[in-house]
Length: 454
Ligand code: GLN
Image 1 (cartoon, rainbow, N blue to C red):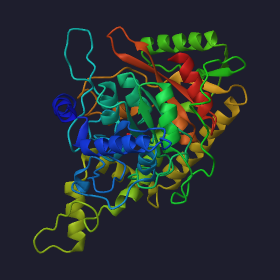
Image 2: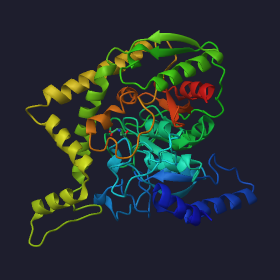
Image 3: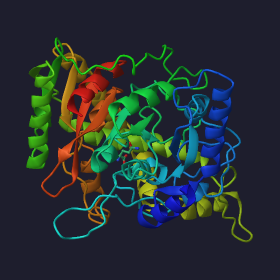
Image 4: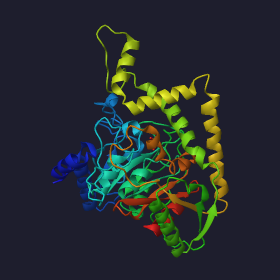
């Protein structure tokens, strides 16, 4: 039964924070009833999916994997999850993640590490990181606990975990999926997307998730294209750009080899391959780690012990003491680090030197992509500089952890659609992923190039 499987997997992977098999069953029964009545079924009819615990789900605890939201049960449903239920999907449970989606290994969760279902073939048996922040989503899909899961991507959190476990995940153009009801991390970057076994499943699920939402002021007022119907791995007439600056020192030679393999497959599919330049690439990571914490420090000000889950009210304490005690007890170490960095770079004396400068860099990075896309239709690059690493390896070294996002953050800063597709295994038997980045609104081009690789 599902309960037995989840219980076993819970012990092994810790992918779910809460299991809700009754909801998945309800959806399946509703689909049966609709089918019996001859009704038209939705795109996701009866499909049991995992929901990253960053999406507010009515009546089901929503924590962002933080102690500060423990016990918080929303009275509303996020637009993206509501769209999925409308398409017939059912919720198997809420998936673990890095706390407030801050992290690259799922080691910052209050509810414990998620463990990748993969093991290296080197004789050791080290538990590996499933990637982050959508580590529960990646582990659950890779272990076949659910055929698909939602993810969110602020600076790589769909693509990097997908690459680490050998599945497919796409972050659409900023604004495609509503942010309404998604716990905010960095609002100008946050974007939801699907994580699934292959490109076609991602296309189907993204169609269900996306769409204009008047409740999100940055939602794109555009129709949702028929991405599934538009799938084609015939790339004749298409140009694929290879960004020179992504050949970085420190990139695993096996990653570079898989990149060459991907280039060969795209040529086989009929594409022309051209070299392009994204000259400001090396400033993307520092800009991201200023902008994302700045926005986070503002978004997370709402967790004050008055609203939502945790309240720490020491005996005889005043309001200020309650704020301080609640936030001290409720936020994890990485979240506090981000709030400190964010408030620092936004403070009066440093705002121009850090935050404004980072915003200028962001504009230059967006311009780099615009210029590159005058010469090509999609860009192919690695998703990550290395394959998955053992849990514990980088947890005490935030900079080493942040460096994992080096190939993911430029597309996030530019708001572009980007996908990770599996590209074989390395010599340790671990999955590698390749990243396809597209023009704004061209999810179809991204999906089709991905299809030619998978
Ligand atoms: N790993 C990056 C970070 O920690 C990206 C996280 C994300 O995309 N949510 O900020």
